[in-house]
Length: 94
Image (tube, rainbow, N blue to C red; front, side, top):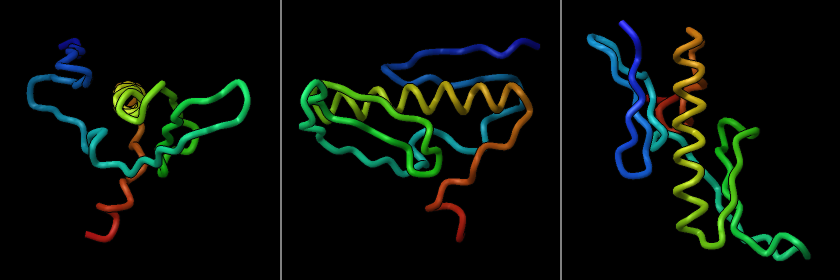
């Protein structure tokens, strides 16, 4: 059965009968900071457990929305490839 990608608001979710992703985008810790560097002048967001996933936006809210989308798509990609994503730090000790 093919996997379906559904955008709900600004969040992507994967659905398949009987399956679900282990961790969702909101399980991961992100860091958002303002870069005043000439040419940047924007808010930058980064997933702490996946340092290669970064986005930016004109506001903190936009950067937060963009990082949630980017992380959701990255998780969907590794899930589709059969790769176990990194365990979110907040769930690692549970």
